[in-house]
Amino acid sequence: MNRPYSAKDHLPGELYSAAQVRELDTLAITQIQDDGGDTCGFELMCRAAEAAFACLLERWPEEGSVCVFAGPGNNGGDAYVLAALACHHGLDVVFYTLGDHSGLSAAASRAREMALEAGVEPQVFRGELVYEGQVIVDGLLGTGLNKAVQGDYASAIAAMNAHFADVLALDLPSGLSADTGCILGCAVQASLTVTFIGVKQGLLTADGPDICGEVAFASLSVDPLLFHQLSASCERISWDRLERLNQRLNPRRGNSHKGEFGHVMVVGGDHGMGGAVAMAVEAAGRCGAGLIRCATRTEHVAPILVRRPEAMVRAVESGLELQPLLAHSHVIACGPGLGQSSWSELLLQQVLNASTPLVLDADGLNLLASPGWRRDFSERPVIMTPHPGEAARLLGCDIASVQADRFNSARQLAAQYQAVVVLKGQGSLIAAPDGRLALCTDGNPGMACGGMGDVLTGVLAALLAQGLSPWQAARYGVCVHSGAADLAAREQGQRGLLATDLMPYLWELMN
Ligand SMILES: NC(=O)C1=CN([C@@H]2O[C@H](COP(=O)(O)OP(=O)(O)OC[C@H]3O[C@@H](n4cnc5c(N)ncnc54)[C@H](O)[C@@H]3O)[C@@H](O)[C@H]2O)[C@@H](O)CC1
Ligand SMILES: [K+]
View 1 (cartoon, rainbow, N blue to C red):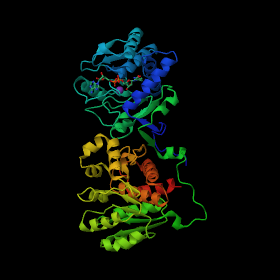
View 2: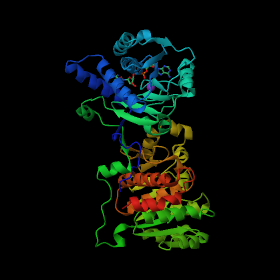
View 3: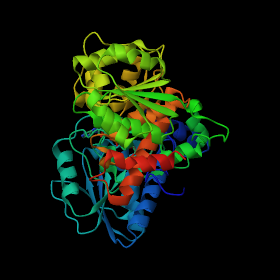
View 4: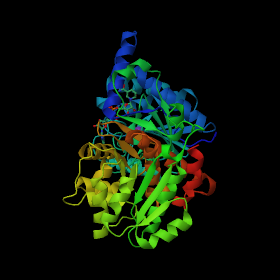
């Protein structure tokens, strides 16, 4: 199949924190220096500005002018060089500065001289943006952002966002945290972000994707060997990338039978929530589980069987009835529609007592977060799939704290519960107890609707049942789930996408 799955798929697989990119900068500058180049980073700054200017010309080839904002750091230095290049190219340049430019770094000072020699006339931004053209370049703040944006900077950002022109952000939109993807105070809304040397992890999760626009990566011709000197903080994954890494499932042997592909047991569906288990059952089937059982409230048995007669559905009104059923399963998926009643608690108790590989979602997680339920899963293969609300309950904090640093929240949960954790939301994160992190760039806002999590639970259970480890299953399952949602949304749009719309695409992608 040759369809594109993600607009971000041209980006490399390694994601870095701001501190790591600073380290890469330093290594690259040292190498340039050893090769007889400058010692202050001016060379890299020029490469950054050249790369960004090339993107500008490609994206806005007809534009005869540009408005450039420069802050007092090296992000502003990039902006000075870009303005010089624009002048040489014959564009009219309006140039605004913010902050104190008397203390520019050596590289940024040279950049400023270069701009002045090219004819750029910097003016201090005093609250009014006077520019008639179509392209604004944001060089206010980059990876050096260290506090919430306010005052003059906030006014400049508001003026850029209110202007009809498109914004090209240098390295990252000013106001966005390179580490967390959160907006600190306020941030520039860019149409295009050209990011340098290493892709910052914050561009691809939380608010990042909403305000970066298209993301272009410029390596600045830094020696790839330098990247081996430090390990990336996080791996970017997508359905396409898994294929390139040869990490998709192999075709099935002809001489195989259903016993080789695992028996999944879906547990959940308290009164009024039968749909959740039905969706998990169907997703597990479409993702290739050999056999699917379901234990649920009596009233849901017939409706689930009507929808999916392939499943073996049992009415379970007490934990004791569940126990023998669990003994015959290879993987348990518990949580969809489980509820938090005494029935739910009795079922979860049995599920936690078993040693079978487990996917724990929704109310399974909410109950686990209640006093007395806490578990350490180091002896059992477990995937936990919290959305930020469930993650907050598990960590004993509020949702804002989870979202304020999704990377750290996912890592913390994986370490505390000794399980693989999928922290759902824009740029879903997968964390392993040993600290490994992956971020999925597939998916779309149409997935913010009821039932999507139940489908993911079924997908993950099917992959565990087919022999993948929790880490492999989570990487694979999040990508196939999000990839299916992207294909479904491409047909009819994101708004109105339903969880069951994913089923045919799951089936297609799994093959
Ligand atoms: N160091 C290098 O070698 C390279 C750096 N590059 C550019 O340099 C940037 C990083 O430069 P810097 O480390 O100088 O950092 P920045 O240019 O991002 O900004 C740092 C300055 O902004 C101030 N500041 C931080 N947060 C603020 C806020 N909320 N409100 C107002 N002022 C605030 C700081 O006090 C400091 O003066 C990168 O993002 C990239 O654009 C590129 O030129 C490539 C090479
Ligand atoms: K910027």
